[in-house]
Image 1: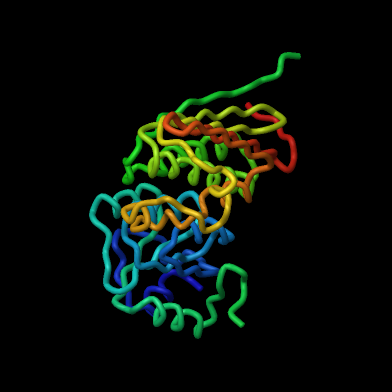
Image 2: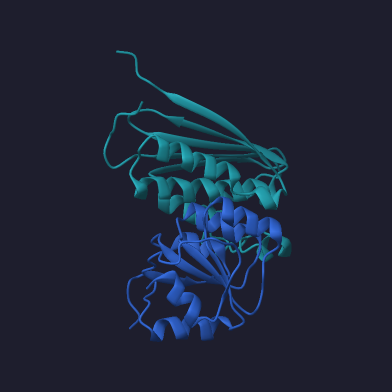
Length: 118
Length: 148
C-alpha cells in the first residue's frame, strides 16, 4: 500500500511536505509503548500511535520504521515535526481513534509486523 | 598485520528526553557508512537506544563508547547515577522503577534490558548503588567484513 492510499483511508493530514507519497508501506504497527515497538517490529512499518513526543520519532528512526500516523487528533510540536523531517520520516495526523485507524487499514489489506492479519 | 580498531565516545545527558536517541542515531549512521548489513545495523541501533534511554531516564549523565574491530562491535555505556539494586530483577520483562514522566514518553515498562539482551550476543551489566551502572554489549556481525 502506498502512502497516499494510507493518507486517504485515514483521512489524514500530512504534517510536513514534500514527502514521497508513492512510498510503499507493506506493514503496520500500532502502539503507545515504544519499548514494545522496539521489541517486536521488522522495520519498514507504518507506526500508528497516540504518543506525540520526540521519542516516537527516535524510535521510528532507530527501528527503521517508514512513516508515522498520529491518531485521536493529536499533533506533535513543531520541533518534533522538524526532527521527523530531518530524518525523512513522513508524519500523518488523523482524527480517528487508534482502533478505527487500524481496522480501516486492516480491512484494506495492510498486514501487521508479522506479515499477517488473520 | 596490525588489526584496525575504530573507536568513538559520545556523551549522554540525563533527563534530556528530547535528544534521547541522538547518540544511537549517530551510531547507526556510522555503521551504515561502514556498510554493515541493515539487519545488523538495526539490532545495534535498538540495543544502543535502549541503553541510551536508560541513562536519560535514570542517571545524571553517561558516556557511550563504541568500538568496531573486524570481528565484533562493542558498545559500553557507563553512567553516573543511582545504580541498579538487583540486576537479576531488572532483567525481568515488566520490572521497572521508572517514573510516570518516563512512562509518558512510551518507555519505563520494564523492557529496556530484555530488549537489549535480545539484540546482542553478549551482555554484561555491572552496577554499584549510588555510583552508577556499566552496560557492556558485544554484537557480532553475521559475516565478517572489511571496512575502510
